[in-house]
Length: 193
Image (cartoon, rainbow, N blue to C red; front, side):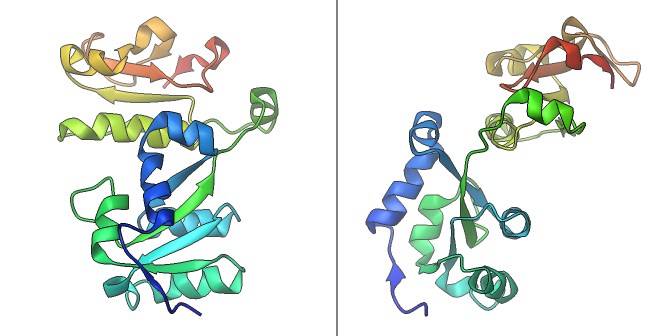
């Protein structure tokens, strides 16, 4: 049963909040999935090690809490301040899952057939690119593709997609149709978009 409410000072919350840093995610071998959709997906594929729900959001996320409990995933209630500490968004979603990083050989992924590209449609906030890159990389995406200002997105390591062999699906300037290869990227993945 969920009786103890964890604050932002709880050792578990402090440890989980450190997962915002890439080095810490690698060291701990896990990451924080934020929001109802991400938590539902983690639970659906059996990749959630723990679920944290904000005290004031328990009713709204009761189905996910019940799913986690039924699957034997530990559920902890956290304060609103703890949710803010864990959140990478300005308005916390109120539910989080702690998930292990996927450590699968690329050959095994490719032999299964699926490929994943994260596609940003009109990213507006400066922080969105970094968050998108981290999330896509954690999910095992091959690359992040977007249409945007090369001077801004070049800072994040984006290059013209054509340079990676990714053909544009539209008639945009080559310099604006950009891609950032991630850890799963291999040149053999190039082709029409």
